[in-house]
Structure formats: C-alpha cells, structure tokens
Image (cartoon, rainbow, N blue to C red; front, top):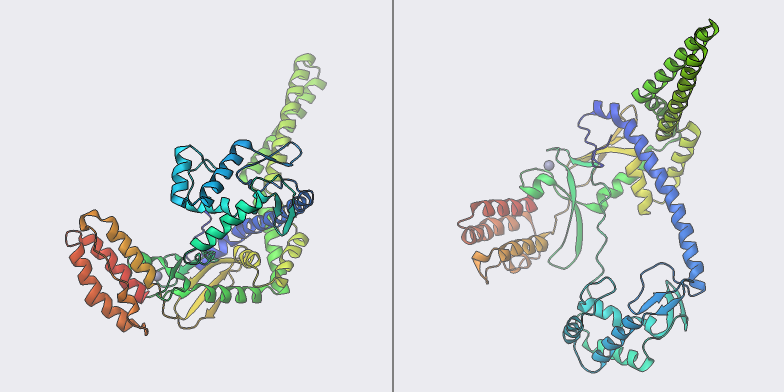
Length: 466
Ligand SMILES: [Zn+2]
C-alpha cells in the first residue's frame, strides 16, 4: 500500500480513492506504537527496580566491569588492568596521543573492539564508576560496585584534564527531526520538500524545509522556510479539524473500509474452496446412502474433512492478518488526539502520520490534504519566508569539494570573509557576491570541469532564491 513509507498523491481524486487505506495503516502503526510505549514504560520500571539493588540494568557496561549470573557487577581483571594503565599514564604526564599509541601497541581495545580515540579515552578518565560508585540515571550509590581506581589517582586525573581543557565542548547537536518529511511537497514544481540545516556566520543553528529542486539545481520559485514555523502551523490546523463530527465520520469510514478490505480475493477464494468442499462431501454422503462401495467412499469423506479443516485454518489466519477495527475502538482512539500537548513531539508525529495525506507548500499558503474519504483539505495562509542564512554551511561544503579535488592543490579555498563582511544580508548583496566574486572564482578553479562549476553555481544561486 505504501512504497518506502512515501505515498505520492498527485490529485484530489487519488486522495479520495486511497486515503482510507493509508489511514488504516497509519492507525494500526500508531496503535502499535502506543502499545510499545506502554511496554517500554514497564521495562523502565524494571530497570529502576534493578538500580535500587545496584544490579546491572542492561545499559552499556564500562570497560573493566562484567556481570555475574545474579546481575551483580564484577571486575573483569584484564580490562581493569587497561583502565589502571590509562590512569597511570595520564597522571604521569603522558598526553592523549601518547596513551593512544601505547594502547594500540599493546592491542588494548575499547569495549566495542575499536581503537581508542581521544574521546573514548576521556570517557574512561571521567568515569566515576571506577571509584566504586553505582550510577544509574539520578541514582548514585557509593560502594555499590567494585572499585578499580583510588581516589587520589582519579582526582589527579581530573585536575590535569581541567588544566588541559581547551575550548568548551561544542553545544550538543540539536536533534534534526523533520516532522513533515515524506508528506510535504512543493506547490510549484511538485518535487518533495526536505529538511536542511546549517550554521550561520554567527554560529546559530538553523533548520529549514527546502524544495528538492532548489537543493539540487535551483530554478524553483519556492522559498526555503523555517522548520518550526511550518510545523507549528500544520499542527495548529490539524488539531482544529478534530471535531466530534469529523471523528465520527472518520471512525465510520474506517470501519467500513476494514470490512471491505477483508473481502479480498484470497478470502473469497478460500471461502469458495470451503463451499466446494462441503458440496463434494454432501455428494459422497448421498452416494454412501445409495449403497455404493462403502469403504472407498468413507475414505474419501475423511480426506475431504481433513481438507476442510486446513482451509478453515487458512481462513482464520487470513482474517487475523486483516483485523477489523470497530467503530467504538476507533472513536476512542481518535478522541485521545483532541487533548494532546502540541509541544509533545510524539503527539505531533502521531497527528501528522495519522491524519495528513499530503501537504503542498506555496510561498504564501499551503494546502493540507487530510486522510478522509471525502478528500477534505484546508488552505492555510503563511507569512513571507525569512531570509535563510545557510551560507556558512554552503561555503564549508564548497570548500570540502574543492579540498577533495587533488588537482587544485592546497591553498585553494573560498574564504568565509565573503559571507561575514556584511551584516545586512539581503538578496541583492548575496547575488552580487555570487555573480561577481564566487562564480568567476569557480570558473577559475574548475576551468576544465564545467559540470562542477555549473552544479555549484546553481547551488549558490538556489540558496539565495530558494
Ligand atoms: Zn519546487
């Protein structure tokens, strides 16, 4: 029914035909998800209970530890020796690179069998479990597990690390989750619209939806829009349609559709075979009554009865695979969506998955096609898209492409200065930079590779006009 999770509905008529089918799948998936969330909560409760007793909860084990048959932590002697070696080298003045060399030379690997990196080494050096502290989420129980490192060594390592600490670690990567992917399409060129993200020249992190045509080669008039703005609009509108009348109509039409779905060819075929079987048996019984060869006919009747039992089993299997959702069940399920928290990502995801068939995005409005049998849709005005500061990322990508091209040699790169020079980033300024500075530069770099020039020119232009 769905191809790779993407259902392309290009016209309203198609939506009318297929939407209830998609909707059933969406509802089933979502129900399954709901049940698995419950299961996950049970597992979590089980883990918390284990934590109270300082037992292994099933999360990753730190290097140096194992678990016995009662789920108690024990020391893995070989790994613990590696942990002590790492601390010893570090507090005696070896730097990370020295330690990594030592570990590699001695064949000491991480828990996952990889060579150590600075990062994994750091993970070892800051792990307070080595002091014998049992740690699970917010629970810390000193003495809860065997100790591997003494306090003095551990504290010395922390001091050295604090001293060597360079620039603060980068801010945690913002989770890139695009709610509308697969459902959202460009209203102008009908291409998909996908998520793009990047860092501006000020270092701020941005997420957008961009027409794929513009991402690849440019040329579509669809402007790139802010992710949060469009997603909020879609959620707001979708909650509005969840009226009691709508839910009633939806539940009825899905129930109907389930009934129809069950009337498939396979079901019909098996049912017919069962009827044929019954007829045949009835004829054999008549023959038997008429005094024909009794033992032969009895054997045939028995064979037919066995066949019938097999067919009935097949029929039952087929029905299980096509569950019938009942009106009351469906109504209850949909009503829960009228009282969700619009900021809850799971709620937002369920709303989009279940109720929305397709979104067509234009510059000043979007059309949301809902998953209902009468092809309900709504047109939502949207504000003028803001200018998209994806320059930093684009320039980085461009420099990477240039860097990969060995024929250009070192030293060729586009300076960030092109993008930081001007605080007022407007189309006219960007266009001028692209046309009079960057495109000539690209022509020079790739004079023998016009396809590279063409490709990058389009990307740069697309970033302004897309
Ligand atoms: Zn487009």
